[in-house]
Amino acid sequence: MIQQIELALRPRARGFHLITAEVLQQLPPLPPTGLLHLFVRHTSCGLSLCENADPDVRTDLSSIFDRLVKEREPYYEHTLEGDDDMPAHAKSVLTGVDVTIPITNGRLNLGTWQGIYLCEFRNRGGSRRVVATIIG
Figure 1 (cartoon, rainbow, N blue to C red):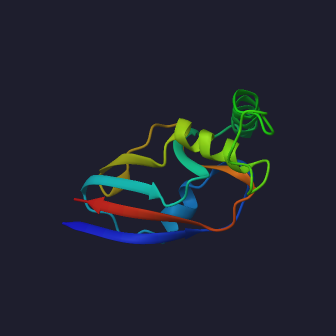
Figure 2: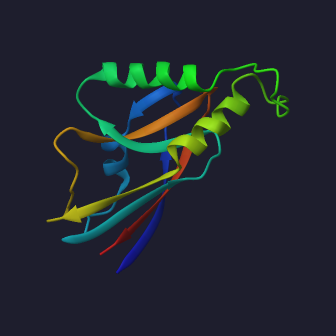
């Protein structure tokens, strides 16, 4: 069985956001075993799995990414869409735009401290669309 649906995530400010609950609320019942693949349909954000308990991790990740990929670098040529746009594309390439999570006993088989992150790299990225493919 393969099911595919498109999820709408609420708009968020720039940063790393735990979205596990928001994703689960929009999914149909999961099969006993299988895979959930999530793919974000945008070029200025990403998806990742990381720490789900301490919000300091998300703050630190934002600081790290902002130091790795700075705004207003003189060598950027793609600058028409704002200072945060080209860095957002580069950060999206670094994080990637998809995650795959095993499904076991009808639940996402995440580690104790793992959660699904929307990595929003624009100051105001707007609502994000995620394609969820359930294979089971």
